[in-house]
Image (tube, rainbow, N blue to C red; front, side):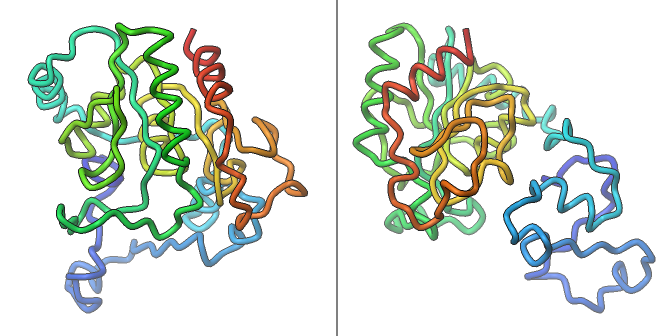
Length: 248
């Protein structure tokens, strides 16, 4: 998320850079930000607001993630051309939780928070309904190659910067609380987000249709339990309806 950002001089990789590195000890402008150990944990602040408070930045509700990926535009065009994608397309993500760094392709898929995922059989219904509604639309699946795949969707092998550039040209997206919805906010591409074990008032963006089994768009803390397995079980027909309303 910091790559290419002109406001960031250097990002410390905590796994390889020692804390006594000269670049750290000589600087008077080092920031350690960990909102997950702040007031954010109470379930009221949006993640961006929490980061702003930790870094002393004025928070505004229209703030969105900003990724700098113009350098990947040519590669994105090549990926789409190789896949023979020339018309309208959208992007979907129904599973997540795997970091792309250090990914081992032959490992079985395993999510640290499976309650965020949209059930496979419901996801397949969404893809099938979308293809029935518009057979000419291409559906691209965002994810790593060991994740469940869907008939009617095309899995592309692309890096995150390339995906961000691909999203800029997408008609819309359908996702879960994972990296796609945050990249879509930066790419200014709207869509539908299906919420499971996390709160859309903290991780979501109001320009999208945010929905779980118990509520839609307006957050009600009294209706939420992160452990409730029904959260992500949103009717596939409703997901498609919301997508059509959001992208018409």
